[in-house]
Image (tube, rainbow, N blue to C red; front, side, top):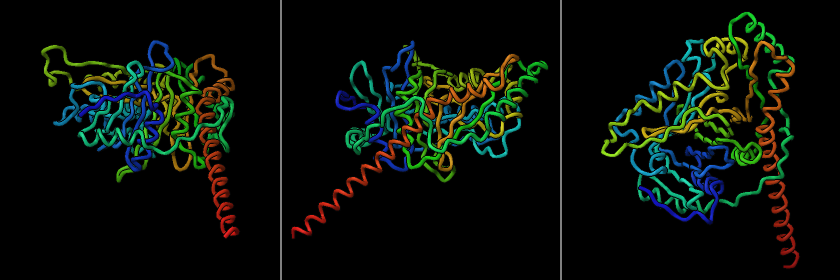
Length: 403
């Protein structure tokens, strides 16, 4: 079921914040993308109240699982407008470590699953050209509820002034600059020996949440790191996996397919495997792996200290009608009370180790400053609450004295 409404009274960010607040404990997402070098794309896509999820376990081929599910009865069809199609699509991510599965490389011992997708969300697509928003849901009741909830969220606090050079409070780098430089030197030696042409080495940065809202990280990233893709995934805790929130900005498109049945073609004639096959083919290339892919990923697996998890993976939506999936670069995620992110340097025969360590810090600047903005927004919120409580107490005390 769909419903199209004017959208001149609300922004996508405000609408998503309202929907997320109205559905605690339910998975949701927001995507914005641009093409042809534009800063902002025509469509912003929101989804919430996902009805089900699929976990893609380590040790199994996630692409085969996704292709099989697309072929099941009740899988998404290729009919309807954009909002209806995404309502019937799979939305989620695959970790970078999926490449180890593809290349026959030993997985990390702590690795439990390679990806997560949510399904059958109620979806809102904002069309900036038409100034409309189209809501799609599994029932008319879901559509009507969404139309009310997106306009009745809590008051949204403004972000503090953004400083592109700010870093989070209590920033940690588990691999120091010196240790990372040593790993670059080791990779360069293996390249010089002919084992690979180029290797991407990643490192992690982390900072405590300090009560910050990860959606504020997304809001800040949109301004600090304008890019081809902006994404926010908020997976609720389930009996099978803990909650997971990811915010990011990426300039690398892995797969973009827009396909509908041609005139006279039945929906069932559209190939089930095509978007998944395209993702499989694209996954082992690009800026996060190196060349040749099999050797480069094996070398990075030997030199790095743990899973990359979100960094360098894939994030987006796909269904029978097509897909839009970005490389998960510039990503910030939540783990055990910390914001985490990773960056990587492309190491070649002539790479200078200390310069590459400095490069990873520069590449992390946008996400790090977005985390600091979210931390500062929480501080401002807490200070405002303290002032409000103090004013209310003073007014109560004054009323008692007057009585």
